[in-house]
Image 1 (cartoon, rainbow, N blue to C red):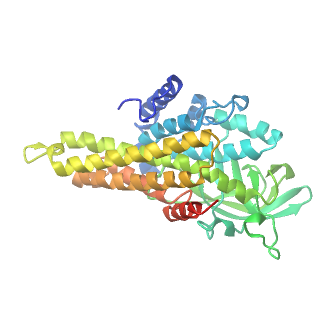
Image 2 (cartoon, rainbow, N blue to C red):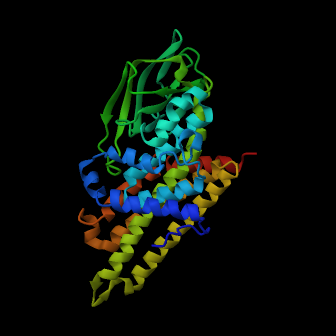
Image 3 (spheres, rainbow, N blue to C red):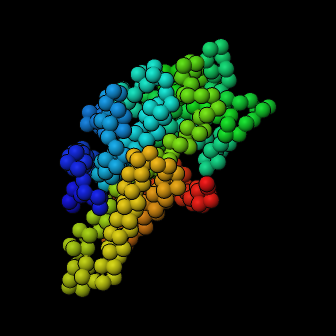
Length: 388
């Protein structure tokens, strides 16, 4: 495929980044992705390798050892990683979009100095702890409690669905700083910077998942976890706002991941339709298959065009809540639809693990769920239609 996957012509720098990401994906990810998936194996060496390329600090300023790139360039690279291995892509997406951006935007100079450069270099992997076993789409109902303890805090509770929580060196955790007697809803939630060395910090259940099996998803258990006072991020009571604003950006990363998954399935289907023969001719010659491939191509291009336009708006400083949700909704449902069609193109072979499209199909499903379900995205979009 040509380097230009965007309707907007790429700059020389963007082309170089895409080529670097594509080469890395071809040599370091594609040969191993199926095996890592089968074994549910997270490959820790990828963190240092991606960090060495600058891909874990793409949006961080050079002052923090980042590349200082724009959002579109980051998303172009992320799509290339996702084509080869969606699990590696979600690791890169969560790290770049959530903890690093929260620290960059709301962290103190000392917090930034301590964490951002090591995160950009791949020495520390970031994670995001918002959801809980009984608090998913209704994130503001979370119950993890933070209680003042001298000049610090003690956190008690369980966080759920924490991507790469087994290997994260810094975790942004939302907890209640109001009291059970005086609940303040979303305004009673603050954000804390956790590290695994804190007393009372533990990694709990690892989920056995349908897809993204090479990306560990775990519970984080906080048992009277002692957190120093300088680990509060920003202002007390503003943590939920920080999380929601960060998810606006994070949804762009998930959209790029979904487009990469869809593109991988589409490219596999195009190649297979040219090779597979039935009734004496390649199946690509049958109009039913041609229409299916055409629809796949059109949906991927549409999702990508919206994503890239939204990235450009973000880089101009414009609000993107509505369009960010549209990107995530359209790209994730495109990924699910395209991978379903790819399995159909392969027929019986699409249903077996010898061919990659069943993995793409499994990986696609979660993009409709995490960082806000499709139903939540529709709520956000509808609410934004009436916002002044």
